[in-house]
View 1 (cartoon, one colour):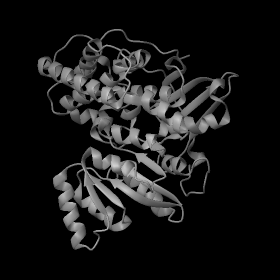
View 2 (cartoon, rainbow, N blue to C red):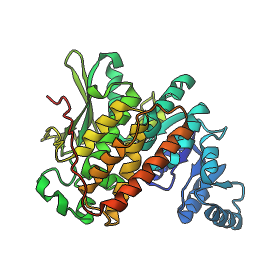
View 3 (cartoon, one colour):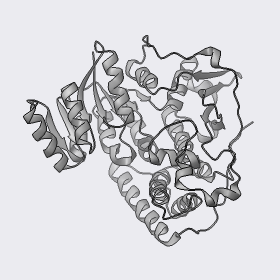
View 4 (cartoon, rainbow, N blue to C red):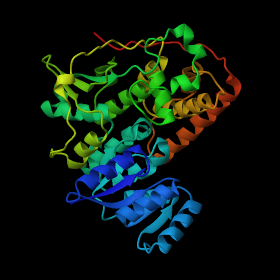
Length: 402
């Protein structure tokens, strides 16, 4: 019986994890949950799963939940709140496996503390590895515990790497749908509306990640994540546009062999893989091979989508640069969603923040959070001074797509 804590239990990945646990009640027990601000959803989860501890983001929400659980006769569930509460969930002594699915750097401290506490980690939070991947992976190696990716691309790479050693890898290929503007001329980008950018052709996701997919910044984050998860330099990580999103990722080995992973587009499958690794167990999530008729591939257009270039530059520099990349992107995307800046301003603001950030090595989570706060302050200043015009982004970096 694997005993699980979920950071971000009311979000999409959290709910999918609970669905997997419900399908395999003899294998998984839910011990602790961090549920954010949705009191109604947290109450239903507490009533269904009876966790030992449940954390809410704010104290007022914790108080409301505690009162409702008491009325229901479920006072045995300890209700906590804030970052300290999330850390308590992540490090609970009865927990074997932690699913990290809190969006943004809000889940960073708890994720790091879970690794320090010797927990196996299923990672669905890109921002943790983008901002503090060097610290997290170093601590995981020290503890001898696995970091198992849950996002579909890196989960696919992890599966393909079971066919060879890391030192035998020539390149990792991360596939990208291309987003809603794959075939939109760059001359039209200044006119892109929020509604158009939120209309992703393949996936239904949260607002920030949907915009990040439209700018290809999400793929840039995945490049950084791949470098840190698999201890491979950025020159060996390629992005390839694959509009069908059938193949989730590929690994090319030094002898020319390429292994590709494809499966149903259901997040429960990579979650199940992470929860049961190194085993594979039966499931009903089947891909109809007869549907595998047409696959298209092309290199990304880095002049149209400079965010991907900026991500390569940031990971090559390392340290505070990747922290600034994530923080500036979050601020710029929020401003675009609010209508404060235009779509083309997103990469412009990110680049100006990166230019102002020194690439020093960060030695602790506290230093990461301080760099994050400074980058956000810088990004907010640039948003305030940007309006809907800013300087042109330069230095597009081509990958070695062949």
